[in-house]
Length: 482
Image 1: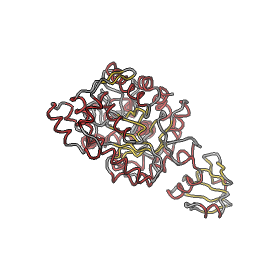
Image 2: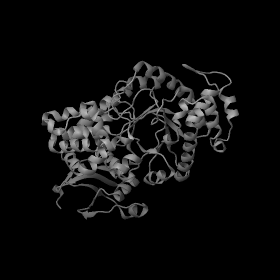
Image 3: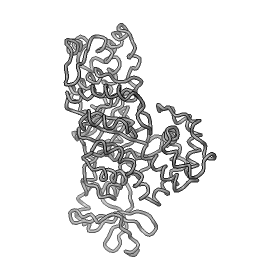
Image 4: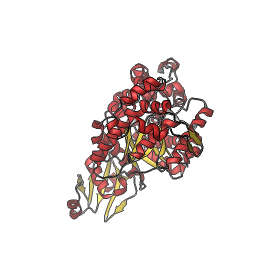
C-alpha cells in the first residue's frame, strides 16, 4: 500500500501524542488512520485499535470496536447531557447525514445544541439498525467534519423497561419516555362520576398521595402565573388524573430503571405525550410537570400534544391563531417552573410555527425531526438516479397501506402518480408535494430493506450533493431558533 493510495478526508487530528484521520483508500473504502499510538497507551485503555500496520501507521476499518477505541481517546466524540438549552434532534435513518447536519449548524450560526444520534425503537425495528450502529454512524460523521462541541444521543420513544438496556450500554444520554400507551384518551369526554371511578383505580401507592390531597393542593384557588391563570376544579383535576395518571406512573417506573442502569451517570429525561388523540390542556401540562418535578425526575424536556396536526414531512396544519393562544399558555407554565424546555415532536418541516415557538418559549425548545433527512436523500436520488427513485416510489405505493398504520396522516395515495406517469424531469417535484412526501416518508422501512444498499452507494458516490441538500433544507429549520 503506497501513501499515495491514502486520500485524507479530514485534517489530521492530534491528541496526546497520537494523530488520527479519516482516509479513503484507492478501493473507495474509508479507513481510520492512527499514527503514534504507543503500546503503553493501548494497554492503559480498555478499547484498543484493530487494524493493519503500514509505514508507521495503523489502518483501521470503521468497526464498532475501533469507534469505541477512538471515543476512549477523543472525549468530545462521546455524547453528553445537554440540559435545558435550545436543542435540535437530527434523525438519520440511512446513517450518512451527520456531515450535512453539522454543516447545517455551522451555516445557520447561533447556539443550538445538537442531538446527532437519534432513532426510535420503532424505526430501528423497521430498518434493522442497532442502537450502536446509529451512534457509531453519527460519531464517524462528526469525526469526518472535525466536530468538537457537545452533542447528545437520544434513546427515542422508550416505551418499556426492556427497551432501556441497549441504549444504556451504547452510551445514550437523552431518554425520551413515551407512555402514550398508558394515556386514557376517553377521559377527555368522561363525565364526573366516571372520572371519579377511574381516578380511584390509579396506582396510588406509587404516587404516595391521595385524591383528597391533590384536590386540596390544586383546587383551593386559581393558579395565577405570569401570562395565564389556571383554573382547577374537581372535574379538571380528575380529568388530568384519569387521562395521564397511569402515564405518569409508567414514566416514573422507567425513570427509576434508567437511573439504576446508568449507575449514577447524569442523563436528560423527556416525557412525551404528543402521540395521543387529544390536545394537552394547559392545566394538564401544569399537572404533569408539577408531579414529575415534585418526584425529582430529571426532566429537561416535555412534549405535550399541541392543538392542530403535526404530521410527518409536512408543515403544521391548523388554526394559527388558536395554536398561538395555546402556545402562550404552555410557555407561561414553562417559565413558571424554569426547569425544562418544550419539545416539538414530528418537528420537521413545521416552518409556519417555528418563529412563534421560539418567541414564546424564549429558546427553551427542543425540536425533534426524523424522516426529513431521508426525504432529502430521496431528493438527491430523484435527480441523480431516476431508475432507483422510480423503484422506491413504486414500492411506496405497494406498501403504503401497511406502513401507514402506525402514523397519523392525511395523505391521499391516489394523489401521488405512479412512476410510469412521470418523466425524469418530474421526479424532484414530488419532494415538494404534500401527499408524495408523506407516502415516501412512512414507507422508508420497506424502501431501505429493498433498496438501501443501492441508495447508500449512490449517496456515497456524491456525498457533497447530499450535504448541500441537507444544508439548504435544515437552514430553514434552524435559523428561526438562532
